[in-house]
Amino acid sequence: MLDYIRKDWEKFVDALMKEREWSEAGYIPTMNEYLKTRCISVGLVPCGLHPILLMGEVVTNNDLPMAHESSNIFQLAALTWRLKNDTTTSEAEKARGQIDSCIACYMKQNPFFTEENALQRFVEILDHTLKEMNYEYFNLIGEPPKCGKMFVFNLRQCVMLLYKYKDGYGDSSKETKEYIMKTLIDPV
Image 1 (spheres, rainbow, N blue to C red):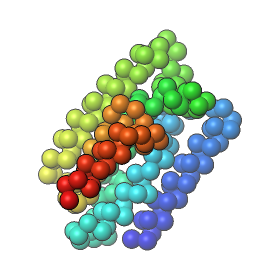
Image 2: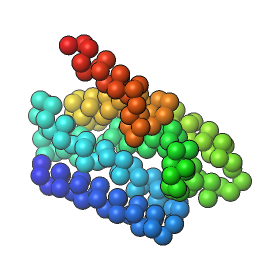
Image 3: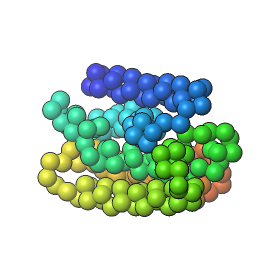
């Protein structure tokens, strides 16, 4: 387990360092570069394995790659998190001077697109990704352990809630706190 955990944290830190290089250089990456790096730096890679290993279901060494990053449901969850974050927070990030959102990368590669067209394109991609993730969750063939699928699926639901209208993670206002209270405290 420790090898997987260490490798995940190394990937995460490498992705953050790559983002810093881009930011310091004022570089807007290609969409492929952006998604490859930003789907890791969103945090699912280092944070996704620990709960899977501790959720009660025995995960063997052979199951670890399937339960984690190499599974399609895991990749879709990371993409969902990244796209939902970028499409919801693009205005605020632009105001802070952050230039490397998925929208900026897409517009660099497709200069004839407006920001609104690019945003609409990513909303469509996000919708398709959510449908594909639903399919993967209920697909029984070649599945990773159920605890892994359940964790990633539930995390996707949390991401969709936190970024429903705005950046509920970075700007945790009253609504975010109410969601947390209703979910964790009030039911008890």
